[in-house]
Amino acid sequence: MLGGGLAGMLAARVLARHLDSVVVVERDRYPDGPVVRKGVPQAHHGHLLLTGGAQRLDRLLPGVVDELVGQGARRLGLPSDVVSLTAQGWMPRFRQIRYALCCSRALLEWTVRKRVLGDGRIQVVEGTEAVRLCGTADRVTGALVRDRSNGQLAALDADLVVDATGRGSKATVWLRALGLPEVREELVDPGLAYATRLYRAPTADFPTVSVQADPGGGRPGRAAVIFPIEGAQWLVTLSGTRGAEPPVDDAGFEEFARNLPHGVIGELIAAAEPLGRARGYRNNANRRHRFDLLAQWPDGFAVLGDAVATTNPTYAHGMSVAAAEAVALDRELSQHRLRPGSFRRVQRRIVRATHVSWVMATSQDRLYPGVVGGGPTRAALLQKRLADRLQRVAGRDPVVFGALLGAHTLSGAPPLSQIPRVVAGLLRGAGPLDSGDPPFTAAERAVLTNRGEQV
Image 1 (cartoon, rainbow, N blue to C red):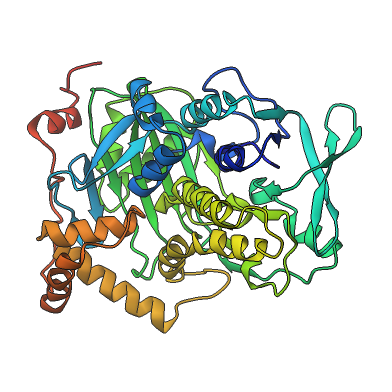
Image 2 (image 1 turned 45 degrees about the vertical axis):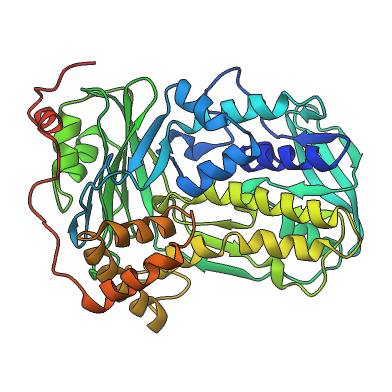
């Protein structure tokens, strides 16, 4: 197992079900506790584990969602615990239809890592990085690894090598060195940058608050979201596409928040206590490697996680897709084990697990000015019009809202009995949603004037 981040840990859990022993090769050294590690620079920023991801995570590690909630993670009802301004207006706060888990990336990784490494069949080699694959174009037999402290090389033999080394993966290079052809890469880059600052929340049990960008507005997208996390804290993330990148200095951060299409997030952070400086991150392009299109694939090798596909993090799909890929790997190994000739099918299933998220992210991001890798297509423009119409209808109809949330949370299509109502809503359409005041409760609204109860 190459890579011991979230995707690597979930894959290691799967491999332990099918193999006698698993070795995780991790280039970092793990911190002792829920602390951000150097190899996960985006861990300082807000993360959501959506319904589909949380369900799959609990399937792989039964009880882990409750364990995270017990350690302070927020289980947010969707849409009941979300105050969200879209280009169509404020979305209503119907009763809970789906849910999301909101916590720091450090807490999530640490909790998952403890559970996975508690399995005696799994061991970790820390401070070590993969150099290349061993084997041929027909069969991978292991990996050559290097100790980062002394440069010493060692060959690790394996029946199965899984690459989960993330965005910096060298899988395409390694496969080419084995004699396989170039792997096609797909790129849609709207130039997204984001900046995040941690705050002490002025009141407990506050909802997530978001001001979303408008991909079809003809201007760079600007957005922001407040993530309530463990320890009665807020992670406040500002984001902007090319030409509207958020600053990380204190004054610039606050001004950006105030000058969004609605100033609610700027008002809220003015009532909160900052805990440290803002941090920026810019490596956010939608990028996918089409390993599934290779006519030949070596037995004994698979790639998953960000090494396969990364999408714009504002859609909050990354961790949920990683869990879906791990479940796909588990299903394929259960069915085919390590049968020769089956690994091309395994890799295709893994790439397929990224498809819905990829289409949702790229069809929106193609519409921003200055996008690199392919501008608006007819399909993207049509999907945008349908999505806007569906969003307006969903704001009036909780059944349609449920169908919309099912797609956005990667938790599946609506029941067949509800599809006629969704189609009828699309045909009927609806007027614009309320663009005035956010749908806060009286207690939540008090925070805007700094009258909320202090934690």
